Amino acid sequence: MKKLCGRYVLVSAYEVIENACVVFDEKIVAVEKGDNISEDTVVTHGFASIHTHLGLYPIRTTLDSYLRLDEWVRKCVWPWERYLRQEPELSYASAVLALSKLVLSGVTAVADMHFNEDLVAEAFLRIGVRGDLSVAIMSKGVYESLDEALRDNLELARKLRSSDLLKVRLGPTTPRLLTPEEFKKVVEVAGEIGVGIHTHIAEVPDDAEYLKRERGMSLKDFIEYVDLRRVSTIVAHGVWLDSDSLSALAHPNVAIAHCPSSNTLLRDGAAPVRNYLEKNVRVGLGVDVSPTYSMLDEIRAALPLHLGRGDLGFRELFNAATSTGYRALGIGSGLIEIGETADIVLWRLSEPTPDPVTGVVAFANVSEVYVMGRKIVEGGQLVGVPSSEIREFEKNVVRHRRKCLST
Ligand SMILES: [Zn+2]
Image (cartoon, rainbow, N blue to C red; front, side, top):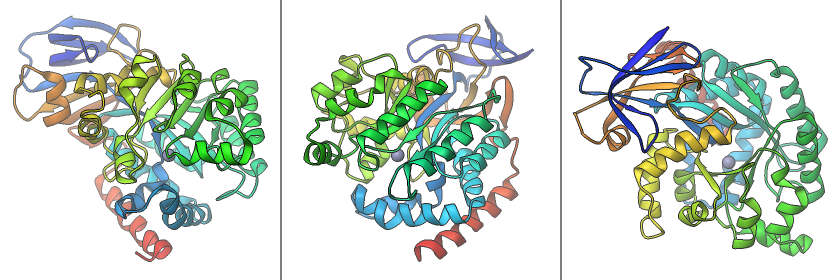
């Protein structure tokens, strides 16, 4: 049995126990009072990033190119993704690098959508972090047909079906890269094999405009036609949802992945999250592609993004990153409670504070991380990957990025 003690234990974003210890093996078995605990320690549940593209980590700085989404995808993302499909080992290196940044910002579960996910899965297993993996299914773009992409995703589901650390979803990328009929078919297959869906909807106004122009469908018509509420569904972004489509997404099976950094850098707009929460639409947080792949930076970025747009505070954002994120991924409550999985983080504050939530978000470093009770970070360093290997991966991915993008 292991024990992790903190001057503060955050049961949730809204409930704090002072001078307490969490006792655990694979699951949390007790939360008890402790003595002589260092003033600078806080114990929290781990964060979930419910929308992430680990494979885009090497091109993350291209977000700051003053390009809008479609132009950025055309100029930077697709060339890199086609290159990755030729060089699958690069997906492994990219995933190790991105996961190392995520874990050292307190993330213990990541929903990733990309290519070469069998190699990405190896990176998750090496680092020991939870994964919820999907292949970016499209019938045009990086894949040539729906069948080719769906086959890859189903093969991934078959390979990982006995893993307790990794789960698989199907990843119909976005309404503009699949026909509504193809999208519906993917949701049906997900229902048949008992997995969820991970998709992008309404990151930009173009999704709704395209469906209306090409198919005479509103977003709400589309959501109902493909039957998104039928399975556990992550909808990335959801920046431009009208009230009808929002009502169609207000369901316990659906969670929106709000991605503050990428929405800001691509000038997508600000999702009216306060409005979504008031309409009982679940909202978790996703790192997506960002300059830092840090969940703390997403929480910090959300504050100014929502200023004057209903405002969001650190506690609500912390709750989105823990409890809502874990529930959206179907991994328990995301709270420090008896019987929950021991996905726990020990933080060191740079100075004492009576407000541990703000302290963690604003001035703390990750000291130890446990996933299913297994220690994956010790002394602020990954246990599974030495820093010398990280540096080699960094040099390698930069070399490939130069080759691919000539920048
Ligand atoms: Zn995305």
